[in-house]
Image (cartoon, rainbow, N blue to C red; front, side, top):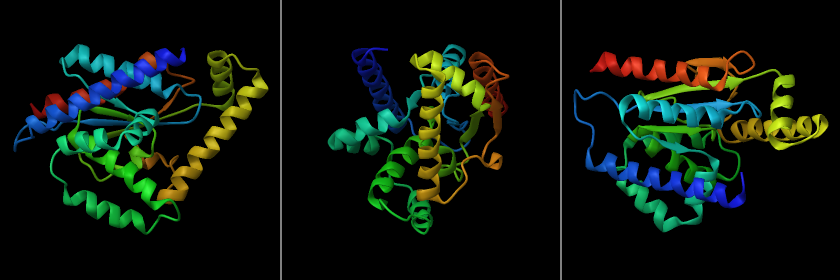
Length: 237
């Protein structure tokens, strides 16, 4: 994907999230109404988690007519570049909930550095997760939002051989280059969670389902995620 296409994609997703925040504010949940679910997807580097998220987003829209937002590191960075826009979006998500203060107080005991940055990150992720109808890829969202009853958490893993082959093919790299890239990025992801949350992101107890990408296609994983989320929605209706 070219730089221009990537930028356009990020801008489109940003517009969707902005509209989602306004829609949630205009129609706040009422007692007895089905919850607005949120999906978090954690993944090992090279498991094509973002492609799964895009497929889930497409399937849910096709089956329910509801537009879901898609949030990842690129979106968070884009928000951070435009503080005024970020504040507008977060304001539209609703009044500040005591849950956020309680959670932040708890997390502060685990922080070791860069508290201000991570607090900003939490302040962006948690309100969207609470509002619902959003898929959050990475960012430790699956751990950050464990206390939110509307969140469904999934993780995608795969053997190193599979991930090397996937990364090499998608990024036109040699096997050695792909392995080096995987090790570097996976190390950064693990350190990120350990540093800020003092948690093991690979702990399966954090997730509803852990998928092995080597044995399941992108479409199959997306179908199973949709089934898990939408089945619960039907029970509440």
